[in-house]
Length: 355
Image (cartoon, rainbow, N blue to C red; front, side, top):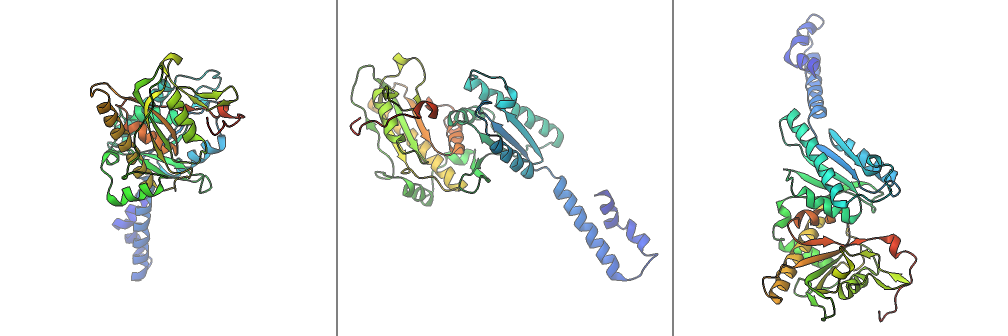
């Protein structure tokens, strides 16, 4: 860049005058020098921070997917931070506390941003390349809400486009803005059933041990055949298994005696179909689900006594960026994403239709 700048300013053209007087030579050299200056500036300018986050334990990590995320980040950003749980805790046998892991990752991101800010003097754009369980992504989103950045995007490892990395959801105040009519129409077209544009809150009949202050938010945004029925069953009974031969795979939080039936549930369902890889659609769906949660919580609080704090259990299956964004949006709410463990549900016999 220094040499090219010198050429552009006329140092080298002065030397060229001793060799030729043809004008086109000077124009060619000058134009080439300017192009090299611009190319050098583009290559050297800051392109933000990419953070590759793999939160699967060592025995579950998929190296090829982590490698794809690393390559995408390094191609798009000046700096890449890799946080790989399998590398940080290679001998891990028992799971670390999920909240502690999310807090650790958020602290690493914040430290890297501070370092880049000190060097460049500006707030870097940050993109997250996350590979994790939905519950871990949700908790990470909640934790990141405490460290607001000017620009924070969650990328998506697409299964529809040959594992290419595509934009997911941008975490920002726009997620809390009311949906435009066109956005709302596009979202509702994807849902299996809606009433007056919004799913209805369904009250669960009174039962022993019922946790009336809890409501279940059941969200299916990807293919998972029995997910809605299983989640309804858990919400309505407080039981995670139909019997010894069929476990739903869900793991409710807290002691068993605190996990009775919920007071009500609401379902947001795309009908066992995957969402298209479209960041604008992801953002609209995230806002829609958040609106459903806010409306259901307010309605249920009014049905109780108007003062009892309402808690939510989120049964979620869908794109990881949406889970992260929902965690970010509901960081101050009493909403817990219910972990679904396929290893518990695997090899079971489906319940009877009457179950």
